[in-house]
Image 1 (cartoon, helix red, strand yellow):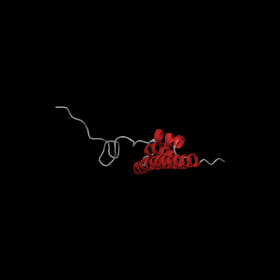
Image 2 (cartoon, rainbow, N blue to C red; image 1 turned 45 degrees about the horizontal axis):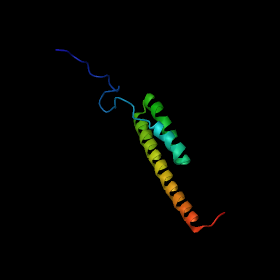
Image 3 (tube, helix red, strand yellow; image 1 turned 60 degrees about the vertical axis):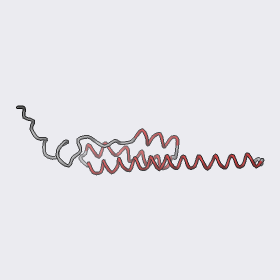
Image 4 (cartoon, helix red, strand yellow; image 1 turned 90 degrees about the horizontal axis):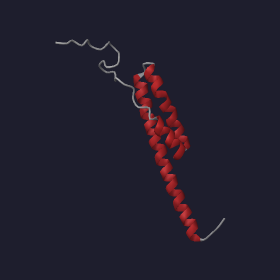
Length: 102
């Protein structure tokens, strides 16, 4: 019978501590910044950049919160980008169909 020692107290894999850092959503944050909504995307990038640093310093709850905030702001950026794009399309079609020029 093989024996595996229990994990070190407070270390990864112990009770209450997740074994791996949460996803930082950095790629999604960068893409939504470039293609959707710059201000909300920048906020998402800031939170995404905090995830690994907080995790490595032992602030696991802060890392999880930063990961959730990065994801939330990336979603906000994507939604704002789509809504603005749809509004722009509607206005451009309305102006083109009215025959007026600038």
